[in-house]
Length: 263
Image (cartoon, rainbow, N blue to C red; front, side, top):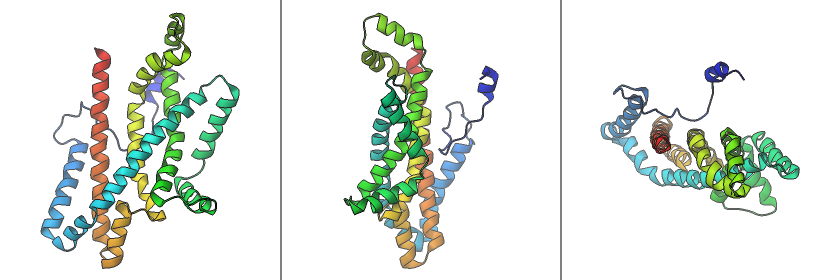
């Protein structure tokens, strides 16, 4: 691809836009959105305590469940993604083919279907607790996407660095661990951060398999009180605050890694 075309190529993502440090304006889109969401989630329970304050008291355990499921899922997805990504660039045909089949199959099946399959269909042979089924499905699903991020990151490192490491007496494994992967991390952090944020939002799907996450707690409150508008408004605000907060965290981490790379 021509360098000009590559530069102008439009990239779409399901993740929240990671704010850049260069956005110093007080009225940047990120600040306006984040502060507005914070103000709303504080003011609504004060102005209209019934039902907004009651909803806010009802959600914390759901927020904790959503957060824990997302954290464990991204950890396992990163492990899966690393090994599958290495398999995708492996010179061993069998390993390469198996890794490629995994990626194609998993990416071709919606996460919702995978959740149903692992919790309900696999329940015919062995039944896993809902939360373990949720983490398993999300890890397997996102592992396929993250493997492509790892593969692209590894390929982006100049091939000459591997050759130089081998000429110094390192094995391919040592060169990969000490030379290639540390540079890969700098490249893949933004897309992995976006995958984490996408996973946080997609975790709302786990409510269908009886996991008491943020969305399910909102649904439970709404079904008991019939305050559907109010309950889902608070749920939406919590999700928005979480995704915007973590997008900022990812942006800060990216800037720190860039600074270390310049030293």
